[in-house]
Length: 335
Image (cartoon, rainbow, N blue to C red):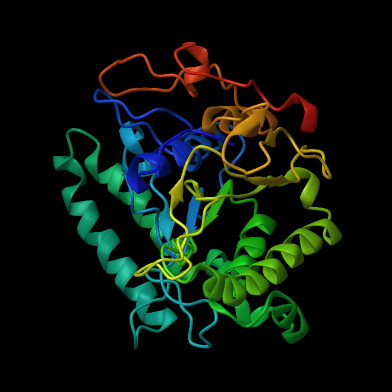
């Protein structure tokens, strides 16, 4: 892959939205677009259509001009903690189910008093949000986040770590047909002591990621689930051994890699090549919007289609529709 951008914010925006930064529009992330499109068609579950484990992206407003309805729902917390509860899903301490029912009855009575004053439909809108929130707190939807329901051997396979259990939680959400799930994993910005960090982090990543793919495959979910793994850029091929870096590697957007699996992608294939130093793309460049468009196409979303904009601006699902960006094309060779 390539985009030539070494800045965290702008590179993250390119990779996570599949668009170029613009002074005019803040485009939504891929997750927000999928949440919008799937909510309009096939997904009507009680869980949010876009879940972030355990925090949202943070580098930009992931919903962009689509608005807060399509922002990621962050779980917060540590899935490896035995007391893990998703923030906002557990009822407040001391509130039993009967007491919660009494509160709902009282709230309904108060709402009825205001119904005649509702001129713009605000109460109905608020009520729909309230029902969704109650479904998360009191309904079956909260069971998706109960990792204690998994057998110990399954939890051990993923690894009893924050991110091992995060991937297991993601699998539970896939089983409940949540359209888009993202896991954010810090610690890869290895400006200093890169190799010490990799010796610590890579075994954990290798274990949990491979188990996720195997688990999805064993459950028959991998053919219908796209799994991607990438950062906002790569790391410099040249190692900085001098102080203060002491074996560090820096931001590098000229040439890096991404992994795709499942969901219609063909396994065991490498697209493109770098030169012998790993500094530049030698063959078949893949840009962020190429990857995004490939994902959209496999998800049944037209990458050349339009997105709704509150001010009526022309906004496309990917910039490939406008032809204003360099492109290697949709990844036909691995579909």
